[in-house]
Image 1 (cartoon, helix red, strand yellow):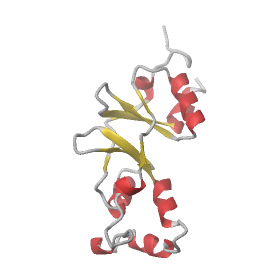
Image 2 (cartoon, helix red, strand yellow):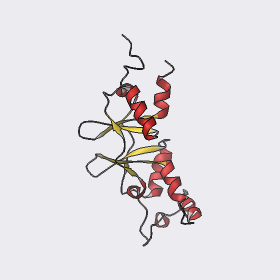
Image 3 (cartoon, helix red, strand yellow):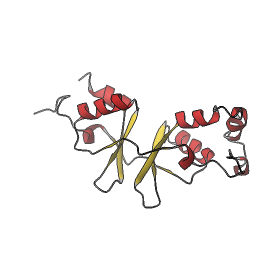
Image 4 (cartoon, one colour):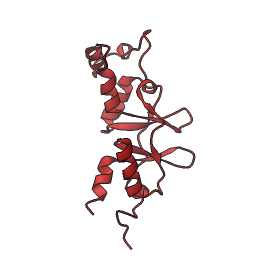
Length: 154
C-alpha cells in the first residue's frame, strides 16, 4: 500500500546527512558553508555533535542590517576577498560567531513523525526548516518547506 499525504513519514522526505554548522564558526565561515553547499540554512551542533540551534541566511542578513548602522561593513567583510581578521566583530572587537546569531532551541522532529504533523508545526512556528534528530538529538536530516510542498501534489 502506497503512503498517502496523511500517513507519509518525515524520514521518507528528509534530506539525509545534513550539512551542519558549528557554533564557533565566524559569519564568513558560515556564509561560505551555506554557499558551497547551496543551502539556505543548517543545524548548529555543539562540541558533542548534538543539535543546539539552527542558523540561516536570514539570520546573516538580519545581523548585517541591524540598527547599528554597520550593515555596509558586515556585507563587505563577508565578501570572498576579505581577510579572516576582518570578520564582523561584536562590541569589544571579537568576531561575531554563529552561536551569536543562531536560533537556540530549534524545532526538531523524529523521522517517524507524519509529514502532515510536521507541516503543521512548521506553519504554526513560521519556520522553513525542521531538523530531524535521533533519540540522542544528533541531526540525521532536514525537512524544508519546499520538501513539504513537493509531497502534497501527489
